[in-house]
Image (cartoon, rainbow, N blue to C red; front, side, top):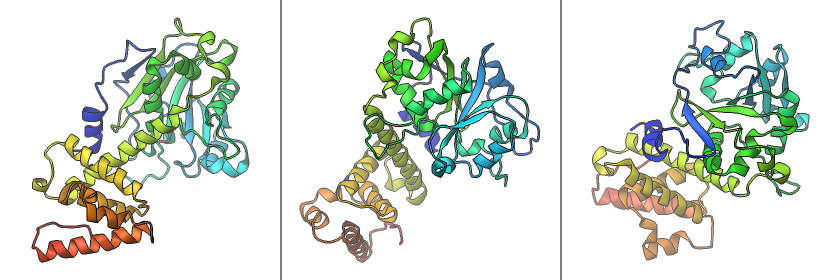
Length: 348
């Protein structure tokens, strides 16, 4: 099963609007990016129709995902600001841009090249999020600069990548039933407001629209100092961990015969998540070894690390945990070959 379909259908929950919460979330039904051969696309009409009268369409784009973003912005006629301080972070920083007109930058932003060789096309890179607001760009710039860093992160600042579509969807979904946290997103200083935040979900091609009921939420609901909840960091980390596990499911379904795997992805996800958790607890850091650990723990011998002698060897405090598991894997593979077990184990 495709990882996107699995995520949406099995993990992501129902796709109906969250009308009972502070935020509503609905699929933008007719949205589609431009194709790879489009030359003068500009802003897709669907997004223009979703922008209320008197409001502007903005994007918060990730320079780390779009090579040369700062150079492309510099030659555009658009108004833009960096959300981080210091030129040294410019090439990996989020940038807020007011989208208007029909310049080439807009065509590049909303073009998904698919498999075509179009390095200038941005949309397929999941470059960021979109929003509509009646606020000028300076107000939004100040607003999102406050949200870019976790509170109480000390001198070594911890940045919140809220402009990453996966994180944005996760966090907005999480605060949908938390009025104060939702207000911290949508209610701006000076009486301005954000009317919509658009973000892609896990399934390619979908764009979701988060809106708040401004008649029920106002400035008095905004938490003091617009402080982000401390739980957001862990919540976003858990979301990323789930995404990594689901990608491993897709890899396992490609690498192993179907008869070796559970028929349903939910059971396989259970095995994969437990194996990943055990590998981290044992100190594995090398991705190739992590993949082998998950393969053995999901297909060949689920929960193999719980066997007393195996665990005693793998959690030995002496030496490098990566080297210990590499030795264990070599022995496991040799024994499987001697026993004529038909496992096709990953190679180095």
